[in-house]
Image 1 (cartoon, rainbow, N blue to C red):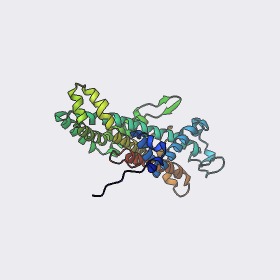
Image 2 (tube, helix red, strand yellow; image 1 turned 90 degrees about the horizontal axis):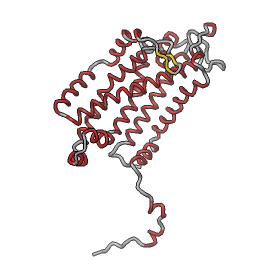
Image 3 (tube, rainbow, N blue to C red; image 1 turned 60 degrees about the vertical axis):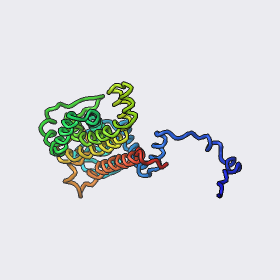
Image 4 (cartoon, one colour; image 1 turned 90 degrees about the vertical axis):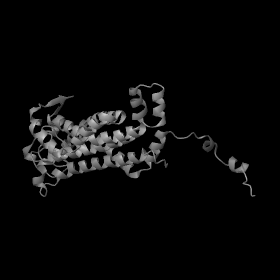
Length: 319
């Protein structure tokens, strides 16, 4: 019978000490390494950082008063050295307005996502952990919310409630009341999808041995949910939350384009498109720059979301 020769001393000696002593990578390091290997996610992350710097860093160059300043004598001017993005129908500088409009669009996306996370994670966790009658009741409510047409509800709420909410001033910035309505409606109508994801995670994880062991040792329900199950469900929550930011920005652009979104004086990339459809051929810069920024940020967020989904996938350990 043929024996297998042990590895020679020379082959072991040729290995670098760093290779022999390198500790195993943690889950976070593995996730970061897989994310870096995703080229489109890297592109999306870089583009997203640049867009955020453009929107919030530009405020140090242009004031909000300048962005809202009207000059009818300079209306509908094509891009030039003085106005790199041109001017709109009342002579306002489009470059400055895209900066301040970008701040509101991004903030709407982020705050609507937070509303979605709070409601969706809470409902999904309670439903999946306790099950039974509570699960049935919460899932029927979830299904009822899903069937509500989101854009229709946004249009109705924006039309009848936005005008009744006064303008809000925060840190020297003036926001129209419609911003609050849009954030709440988007957050309240998008949480069911996340709730169902979280529920499925809880239903699966709560049957694992380490959860049963925690129950047997007398661990409280709150500690089991927040210290054991929720951290193991964080990957799909992060991915869903990331993609919901892009969805919220797009929805705001939809209803603002229809004239029922964020009201002046607050600018967003969406309501900048509202008055541009009459000048599609004669003043292309009115729709091109805000439209391009919306497309870039939505694509960037989607690329980052795809990269996070692959990097956080527990079944993929390729590095």
